Length: 114
Image (cartoon, rainbow, N blue to C red; front, side, top):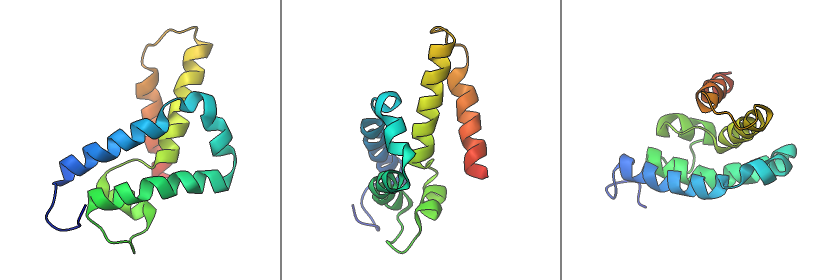
């Protein structure tokens, strides 16, 4: 996608969210292995960075964190950690889902702000 003209930010964000869904599929099973090592976390960021840059219509010189802020997308590693926490809490509660996702989303936003 070109930085200028082309699809609007809304369409770009939708495409990035589809890619994120594919990457996050089954993260509760294999995510701990990926998030254990810094090199694996960086490879996840490398996969997510081009999408964040395209949503923000930014150039390659913009940092990953800045691109996520401008694109209004949460970093993928934090979303994966949120998925793992939700799964663990759901298993611990015996499958009862009250407001697990909402609480974990607030925790993710707090971690991102830190």
